[in-house]
Length: 112
Length: 113
Image (cartoon, rainbow over all chains, first blue to last red; front, top):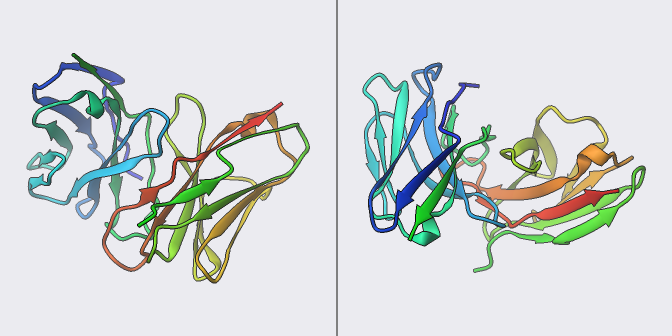
């Protein structure tokens, strides 16, 4: 499994953009990059995933470096509900039978 | 549409006992995966069930076993409980052979005394 490095914690002001970085320098050329988040007292929830190009959905954007050794999850306008632990997870597929290898993630605190 | 449901939400056991945790997947999903999350850590993959068989297994001892029923629901059994088994046990459901995310339940919090 590819190893990931994420900051232990980050803070951001409410209603401002948040950029959550992830280094995955050992990723293979065909690994997908998934992001999940875990709100307090809940199970993880899917945020976004991508392979080579930048991706957008209603929750966030994912910017993937050209060499694919790093990626950044972008929350365009943070709300208090975005306070969670964010996990960056490389995996060999985006199929439902893929096991996910979670690290310790980044704990995001939103300041009102 | 109910998501992934797990039961019980909390339980307390003593060392040496056995525990069974239950999971009902999201409607339409055929695959159930189980994860263990210790306090302050990310979830760790235990095993995955598809077509009533264990398809993948993480680095967990044989004390951890499971089952999947014809209706796709699943059970996680842990025998000879140790203090270190205290954790949040998460169930995730998905479609095995289609692109898509995992949907997690809220977990069962197990405390071993």
